Length: 102
Image (cartoon, rainbow, N blue to C red):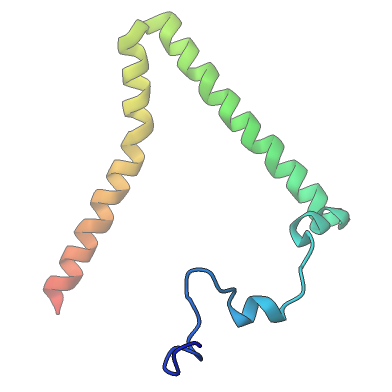
């Protein structure tokens, strides 16, 4: 006979939450978006753009390696990181000055 104190308590590890039991399986809503012409066009355009960006970066690294060797690759990587580094320094400086103004 189960203990009277634990009869209404569910096991949090093995029991399925009540919210999950009550919902119907959604199927594949993310793939159903590809049936919409506008979304499919946007998805293909973004995918091609991302592929082009990746190939452009590979070509740039290859060119740096061919013409400048390992030092050329390091120089390109540093030049690629410089704008992000400057932006982070600028935002941290503006946060610092905003906190001092209070």
